[in-house]
Image (cartoon, helix red, strand yellow):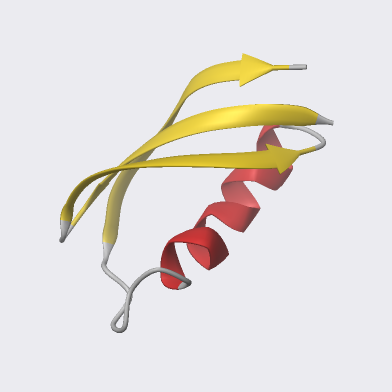
Length: 55
């Protein structure tokens, strides 16, 4: 299991998301769910990039 620091460029501005996942593919699949939890109306995600990966 890895911790990922992900930067997201969205319609609401720049966001930083920290999440745990088995690999990069799973992290990208889960990013939408994590962002949707914090907004009443989910923003449009323009760009998503992994900045840091730790064990």
